Length: 182
Image (cartoon, rainbow, N blue to C red; front, side, top):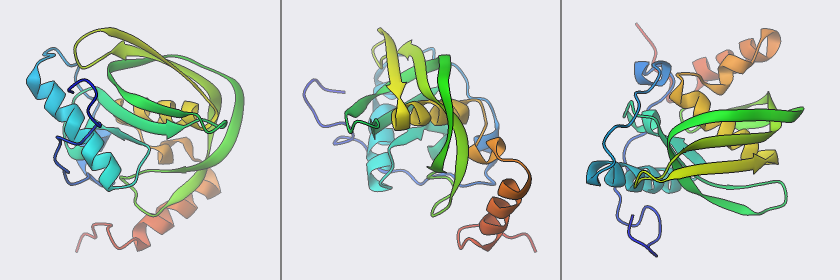
């Protein structure tokens, strides 16, 4: 990204991968090349996230199996957190576990109450290979945990059990974007 530019301004909007696409279920590969292709991917992630009106987007959600995500997400105090993390690792998830509404751009129009910790710390690298540590509380902590889950091949639906999981799967089956097999 160019210094001072708006994230995503130079990116292209890519189609989102939806539940059922195998790339969402595979753990993503580590990034080893911190060159212009990675910078272009981060730009495309921001452009795609903004076009879909999301607060976070992982690379596999646009069909790229690399450990990268972007975010533009408020915390519970309405403080905006804008950035990206390459090769992120969730190093802390603690505090109070709260059930809150969670949606996903790969399950458009749906949401469910998911248990997440209200504090999270992610460590990784910037697009230029500099170490970064991102601290999140409240809704932003939820976002960080959600995006790291994506890169491990997990979706928020995997945190649901019993009645809540069955209800979401019924909604998925009725969703206009859901692929039906003949």
